[in-house]
Image 1 (cartoon, rainbow, N blue to C red):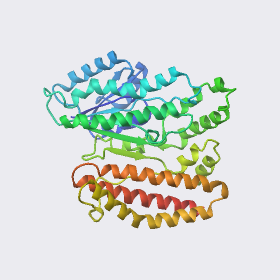
Image 2: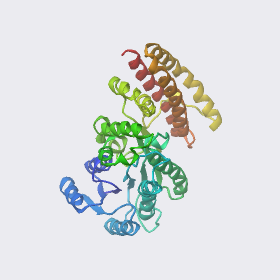
Image 3: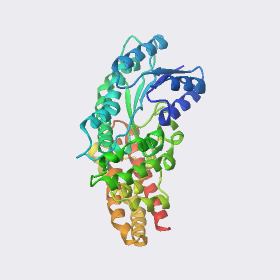
Length: 385
């Protein structure tokens, strides 16, 4: 039986990933901070779940948990480490205390480093262990690519995770250990409900206060309108653990409906217009042979751009129709969101083509086609409202 360690397993993505992996026959070690959560999860999940009690910022406690897992593995390698534990700190840069930035980075960035250093050897860098090499999954966010107002600390922590992951992936190639980024959009987890616990009264005399009130209300709404944790990429494929050939970078956001889009466009910060319009569709593990592009990286990119022009015909028609049907107040946000979406698609999909081998090239082409078609469908839906 192969084993996986998941940090932050008490609720949300961590809980859903643990359940899915257990259902697929894995043994799961899940970290929690409270004994009550450990007892609850042991009761919910059964004998193949082992709770580990530690805070990801407590290096000594994490190292002790790694020793416990090593003993349980009995000389075998660990199949995966899912760095999921995290918090969200909000507030304007000019007024958010430096200690709050430190707290955000300690949990969301330093925590995964501590966990990776502690459990990394068990994935296969330790030559004394036997078995297939494991994987590291970093749970990032769409905020790891796009910064949003009032959530600068959170966005910075997720940007840091993505940079760390890109570097770590190349370092661990030496041992055959893969590093996968999963970046979901809003997922129904308790992280959003915790926004209600934040005391924003300290900003009462700040010019940012009205925007903070709206953003807190928006964050609270994501606790009910976000993607169910069980449907997120992190849970559906076990955080990239259960798939035979996972992509190195997964991005996922729930599609905004008409009511959600209308509400978001009224947000004063401009944050919501972007969130409402960005939708990421994922390619399958295998690409379409007709979409393949060969040659060196430059030739492949040029080939993909040419193919994208064909797919963009439908996209452009849908975009122009959506602009025509939109009320005047919606047009500028729609134009801005479309420009950002194009940049995001190109950066997201062309990245896949930088790998070696046919699969990497096929994935890039399939990603471009799939994302473009999904975006065209979304714009067509807006135009029909």
